[in-house]
Image (cartoon, rainbow over all chains, first blue to last red; front, side, top):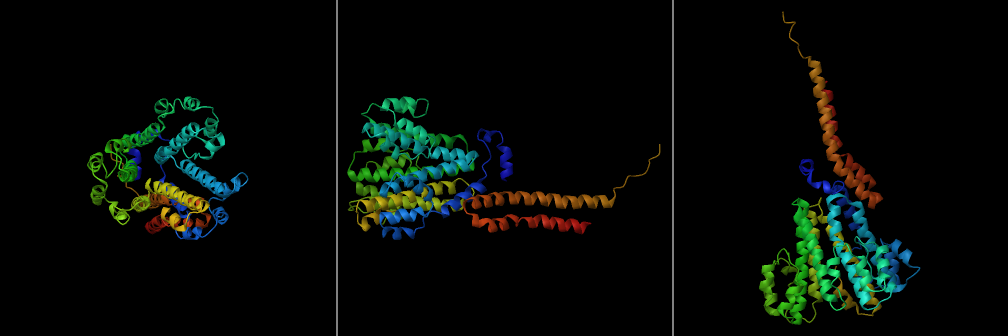
Amino acid sequence: MRLLQKFKNKGKSSQYKGTSNYAYLATRVRAMKSKLVPKETYPRLMNMGISEITRFIQETEYKREIDELARTYSGVDLIEHGLNRNLAETFTKLIKISEGEPNHLITEYLRNYDIWNIKTLLRGKYYNASTDEIKEAFVSAGQLSYTFLSELAGKQSYSEVISVLEGTEYYSILKEYDETNLSDIENRLDKIYYNGLFNVISKSKSKDRKLFAKFIRTEIDIKNIKTLFRLKKAGVSQDEIVDLIIDGGLELSTNNIQKLLPLSYNDFIQALDQYSFWDSISDAVNSDTDSLINVETQLIKHSLKSASSFSHVYPLSIVPIMDYIISKRNEVNNLRIITRGKAANLSDEIIKNQLVI
Amino acid sequence: MAVEGVVMMDPAGLKAIGAGLAVGLTGIASGIAEKDIGSAAIGAMAENEALFGKGLILTVIPETIVIFGLVVALLIK
């Protein structure tokens, strides 16, 4: 079947180098996933001190990064940087080991790290942070390399940074930046990311693209619902919310969101029970809870779970790779929550609530 | 001009073609089947070397197809 498809698409797919070879990529990524920190470890980590945690993650996949960085950093900073660098290297590795269509899709997906880094640069320059401070916050998992970013971080002002980025797709937005509209520029950068993704998806109608589209649109749903929860809770007016909503969700289409917007917080919660993620968040949601932490962790858990079950339905496709990307990101987040929480002397209860296991 | 006799195909030749097809086609079939398993095995091994044994065994399982082909070829002979 696939051979036949290959002949049919011969002309079309020649824009990407190489063939997909999902058998290799998906299995390798699955093997990488099996090396993630298992669920049972988190309660154990909760009982350790910072140095013990460092020691523990040094014995796992993070060994090389921790060894390299131990000269310059110590304590929580060491873990933080180790995690960031490992994340960047793991994602770069995904790009390296893939070819053809999955390579293209992964590259587009990881573009959000480029946007993250550009945001970091702008924010850093805005608050006059030192070059080193800005460099520390980079996660160079996207197209922009760490060396290139460090060079940018060394520039004197934001206008120099922006002029270097001329020619990239972000430039049209960045050139409107004038130190007063940072949040607006950031929102627009996020939107350009999703626009780019949708461009990629709409170009071709192959099975992979469809799966990829479904995955991305579910992610947008989760993002939108989180935004809605936060803003509804805070009582923000609907005109302001509209600007922050990302178009193109799977279940929460623009129409559905229009329906949700005018509702009060309680009615909004009532209206959510027709969506598939309701089952996972129903326990955490009630009108008188103060914090949305539970709701948000449940939402992330829902997206992780659906990605992983989705990856079993389509074992040889882009889905297991996307599943790995979000699981890895979640692992790094969890480890960071634990170490940062420990360093700030938060109680175990609070840290546990924040973890997404 | 007289016809110089009907050219008969030698049954032994047909047999040989049949045997050749049996081995050849099954060989291609196992090749296709092993392609994906082999690359998946390499992928898994790249991350975890302990999987070498399992990967090797799984990779050669479709080899049975060509063995059946070979058996059939020998039977035809």
